[in-house]
Length: 154
Image (cartoon, rainbow, N blue to C red):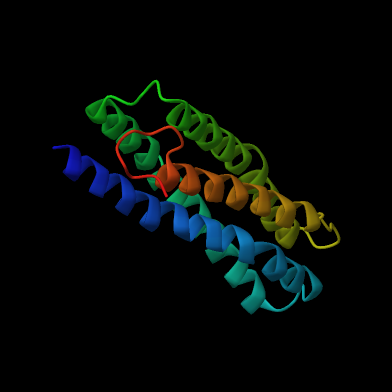
């Protein structure tokens, strides 16, 4: 059962978090292009699509910590420092996504509907970078597992 949970956890991370990381990173540049061409529906449609992908896959991403917790419980490592740190960083990444990335993207979409307003896109790039950095650290902790006695460390 543990192998199945771990496989599902890794698949969920790749298939849900990966698209969020990519779309959140692409969004700021696409937003700048769309805001610079208010009459052109093409760039605006691209921005809407990127936001939708970010939002939908963020919902799907809930499976990652749920499956991760189940896997950790199955392995009996829920109190290990590397896993606790990973859970805290995962919560921080989720907070960045929910409180900064998605609302920032929403502000851009609102501005596309109300020409004349120009929301800042630079913070969106920074927030996407923070989100991606947090997930990169989580991945390193998942692979390296400092203090693990399972032999899975580097």
